[in-house]
Amino acid sequence: MNLGPAEIHVWQSAERPGDEAALEARRGLLEPAELERVDKAYSPKVRLRFLRARVMQRTVLGRYAPDVDPASLRFVKGEHGKPALAPPFESLGLHFNVTHTDGFIAVAVSRLRDVGIDAENLHARTTALKLARRYFTPDEARNLESLPIPEQLARFYALWTLKESWMKATGKGLVAGLDNAEFSLDANHRVVGLSFAAGDVADWRFWQYAPTQEHVLALALRAPGATQGVAVEKFEWRPGDAPPSGQEQRAQP
Figure 1 (cartoon, rainbow, N blue to C red):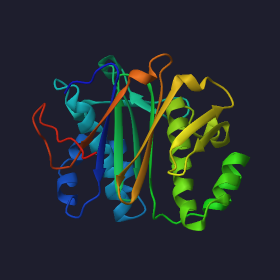
Figure 2 (figure 1 turned 30 degrees about the vertical axis):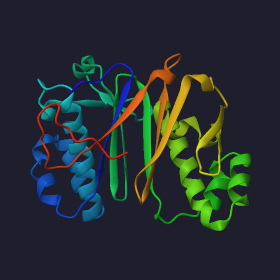
Figure 3 (figure 1 turned 45 degrees about the horizontal axis):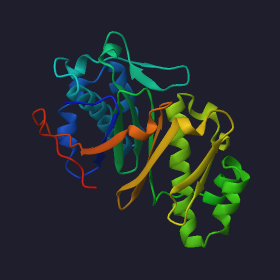
Figure 4 (figure 1 turned 135 degrees about the vertical axis):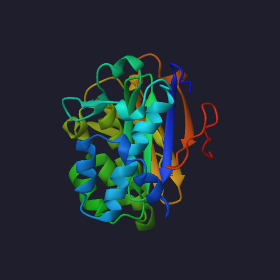
């Protein structure tokens, strides 16, 4: 599968009943350490989610390297935990990021290194205002509190996914600090302004969309001087699918 120098491919997969057999059939793709983490999950549902994420990561990356067995891929983690392809596979020139939440998993793949993705389930229980006061900037928290109660959860998750995708793209994770990036959102919870405690906002671009009725997703990219020319394309991934190259099913917009 082709991936241009100014493209990001987002592969998404909603959890569906009946996927378990297809996922279990692909356990052989995983390393023993991956399988150990999967099998130590605290519930069958979470175990299957971990398995889906690992299988999806390998098979998605394998689409861009048809001469490489997905089971042979090896991974490393950066200083703050961001995953990357290990030598010699880093020579493939693929950078990726993974997110998983209740009911949904996505993998972003790009030739550009600093990419981050985060998705959240809108129905997940959370103390939105309490978390906002603790982790958001004062302006973000005040703006959230000023909204009618039915809109507060959507605003919270819009901000949360934007901040998480930004932190993941930096490669610093939580060390980057949720309150070191401030986002101004419009009435539809879309970005209309941003500022960072450090770094140039012109180096960044963000995308937001709802991949399902239950989920919101944010994608972040840092590419100095090149963000405006980047295109994002979405694809569906299913554990039983193995379409020939060029036959991938594009996601509905």
